[in-house]
Length: 262
Image (tube, rainbow, N blue to C red; front, side):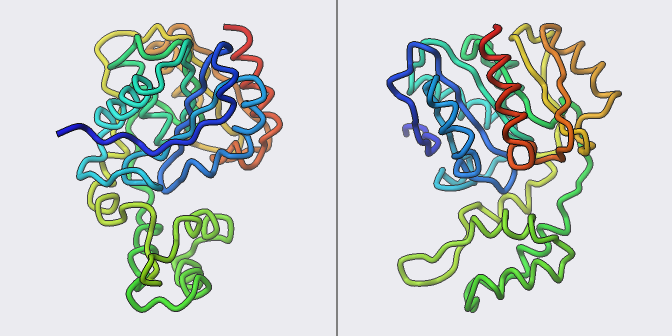
């Protein structure tokens, strides 16, 4: 049986000669989260945004292992057949992009990892999962009802709005999630797993962190330098974990500088 391919969207196809940028979102995200930044990058590059497995309009699967996500990415790159490949990944997408560089080094020429380190992370999405699983989709009457339930589980407005981008109505007018909530809930520990690698990864890499985020610490910087000897770490001021939403102009400038210099 032929393997399923990630759902994707292309912009700037006439710019293939300048290289292709593949953008992969984080946990509970969608390719749509990167539309604004992608449109600007598409003025220069061929941009491919993708929904990760169990997210958006991509296929549902039982695994949330990074080795499997990396294989998904490699398959998409093979389908597009770019001249030169830069991979940009945020959070979970960034960890999967690191795994791509470890497992399929010939598939990419440059790597950008946004606000995630190669190390393991403890479980820390439990209140989000509890809130999402508390929403009774079968009897849900409105998005506001769903938002009220999320609020009752301690989520601020920005997080609620981010999650509710995944809520939609099916053809029979029932509410449903774009992401595969049962699999994400049961396999959330896999999302916190560390990068699996056997040797230093020589892909030129840029790691970006938000100054108000704790996902990449100063201690992580040493590990990143050991695993990725041709990398550098840049801190974006006044940004938390969602750097692309909080400081899009600064992130864009940082990306463009890296992409033009390698």
